[in-house]
Length: 269
Length: 259
Image 1 (cartoon, rainbow over the protein chains, first blue to last red):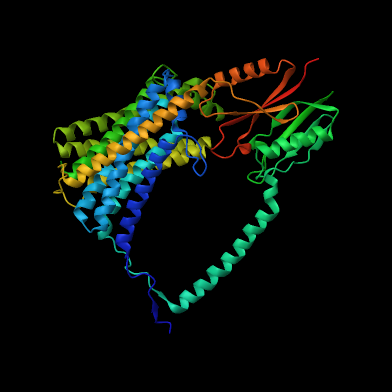
Image 2: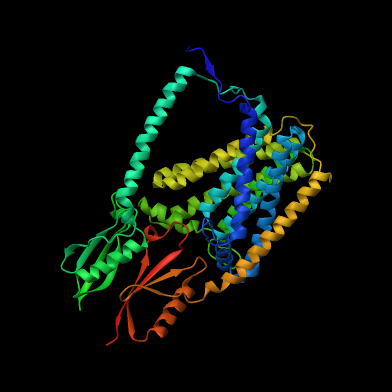
């Protein structure tokens, strides 16, 4: 019985699947980058990043406050990203049609455009002095380069070529997966049921000294919780006037266990 | 052009520009028109001061030493690129190897420094660049299955379709981008509207483009609109109160009635 195999997937085998994953990854990567530029600001179901604001501020820091400069830089970026997207789509199309050579050529141009894009970004990061972005773009450049190597060399790599699994193992793993999923799902829903209210709920202020109070917010608290807490504080202390709020810096909080902590200083009305 | 050579060009161009801008950053240490860069001098002074070495000579010597290695690496990559262009592949590879060797040495020094100064984020950053350099060298040498694959840019039917789709998508996205830029550029200086969230407490949601001038204009407009109110205190909403990436900056103004 243990020798009987349950064939879960006999259509796609390892190496093709890896190439599909690489192609689909880069298609979605560039597609969403292009959409991000087209959409602009945050909308319902898409927040993205306000690239115009980011690039405009970057150029303003160089002394070029006029929006035309940021627009030109963004249009060049959009051109590179769009063509990378188109060439990855072409590579996927040819790969699905089993035109392997055509697929490799289209993929190669997509990768070349990706590398050029990230080199262009890296130069910008150095000029604008943003070393976090430099690291990010350097990493993506590296991922692009590695994607190319894996894409062309995956056929030379020894990979198991089926995803068969023994019936006994299949039943045992299914029992484990279902049990743990049930427990985890229950825990998540229970936490949502008991804690979601913290997002907006007012937090009680604790008196520290004669005119100083502490409010310790839960992690879920947003701006509404802050505003409701201030409203509650004013209602509870009608004779006090808030004249200063101090936000406890990260160094004063207990590692990852403390959320936002504020101290309120008051004076008598 | 051969596929292998094209990848080599892309690798060399990346590292040549990387080191060119790094060297410029050392030559231009402060903020100037056309160049912002990072202030490595201040960073080094602070690092050495944290060790108890407050004399600026230590930071200056360390920065000069680092810059020297960066210049050597830049020259190696530049010569490698030039040799590749001239068709001297063997010499190009030798210069590239030298550039990689100096770069790996540089990032090893950085990593040692990061440990000594206790900067774990910089350690991660330098470790990542170190491995990218090592892999760049491997890819430079072994990037293609065969030396014979030639990349041709013939305008076949599918390439033409790809180019047309690419141009159309670029145009559509650019129009959308220009429209967005036109409609939001005013946010750079325009005062932000207030919302009274608690009696006497007003909230301002400063947009992503907003800077110090937006803030000044906002407060000015608020005071003109509410001559009966006195601004007692301005509180910057910390990041924890923001809706992740959707909100740029929250500002709360606490007021009281003028006597």
